[in-house]
Image (cartoon, rainbow, N blue to C red; front, side, top):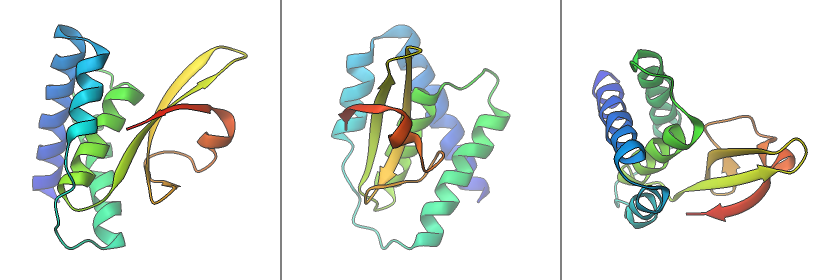
Length: 124
């Protein structure tokens, strides 16, 4: 678990740099192009990876935004064999945007009702 938290923390740093030094298109492309590693997968591993990202966010030196957290979660899950999708959504009134990760249509890193609150704009 410690290795997964460290890997997650380093990915948080990487995406933090991308978000500050580049633009959204680059972050989107990195997540979209991350291939799914053909490792064996179990439900337990998926939960462990999501918890590792949560712990990395706790230890990160800055506030972690949902976009950064979801990009890290999607990339990490794909590296470990899951076909994860980062989902970007919007709420019209009040105007809000949000990002979360789904695996096989199930939200894994947020509340299960996020897709009911936010209209999906993009899946990558």
